[in-house]
Image (cartoon, rainbow, N blue to C red; front, side):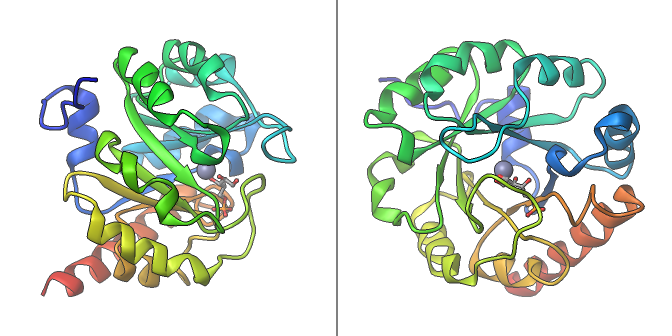
Length: 241
Ligand code: DX5
Ligand code: ZN
């Protein structure tokens, strides 16, 4: 199996490698009747990554949206598309999400007995690879494949719904993963992230913060994105000082 070309200068790799902190607004919390305006509000505020939650009503007890919506959104923005597949059979749908314009495709380790096959399929479509773990899944479940992915996503709520309460008990996993990952691999956290929780997740080592309710759920999503980004960047700088 060929190694991921993490140092390559393709748009995908560049978007993943920079900068130190990224807030990724989650479209799930957006106003779907005003989708173009919602997306423009965060893009104009400087958001570079859009988190796309795909739910199948099987792996998680909720259904969201699929490739056709993503393809339409793709035509409206140049943001990096960070697709989070909460679906039982990611292998089957990788071509559809790749064709829809996703830049990075994250799947859950809990869905796949042969994760290397899924990773290879995502790579063959020229996309970056993410692997996600549920709140009670141990780091050991993905340790052997860490070198093969560009991003690890730690769920800090049970996947399926936005607006849930952050689970601080996942923080030791974030710390452990940071110590295992290379600097150019992203460590993303998802669920209950906002002004009250961003500092502790950044201190633990997260560099990519998914934010649904705390951005799109606010009256001014662009402003909320900016505030959260500045807070997270400030904490990251303190950590390096
Ligand atoms: C939950 C999704 C999250 C969700 C986060 O299953 O994976 O990305 O949109 O929503 P908030 O930020 O509201 O917890
Ligand atoms: Zn998500």
